Length: 143
Image 1 (tube, rainbow, N blue to C red):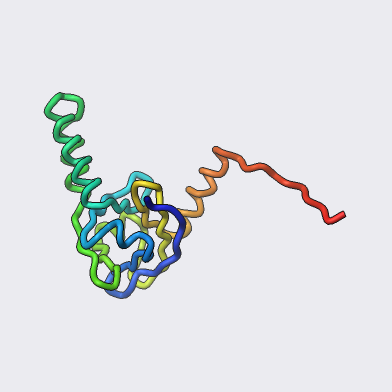
Image 2: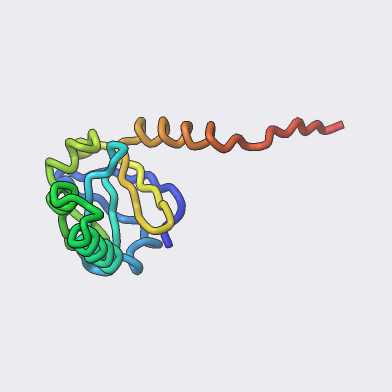
């Protein structure tokens, strides 16, 4: 289970350190995919591979086009997580998410996956989510 928001920074080699609370769930390898909202989605190997098998079967049944299956596969990559809990984000994934080496990033849990965001994009999408589900406004007084 991935929850919470964490501020990180890409190093000069494009590596990102994962929060320690996420590392044990991910293990030594995970999958990165180009996210729909301009982020990078990170999934456990087990979850990604199960989803891939579902996509293969959906395409065989005719419920998914080969073009869509191909697009998902070619926009995903398996990465190793080093002993310091870092993975390398290659140039294509950095470009998709608007990230640069040495720049800050936001890592956000979405229960079953992790998203890696450019901070400005994350704050905009987070505000959109709050607008969909307005929170109660309190008017506390110290009287």
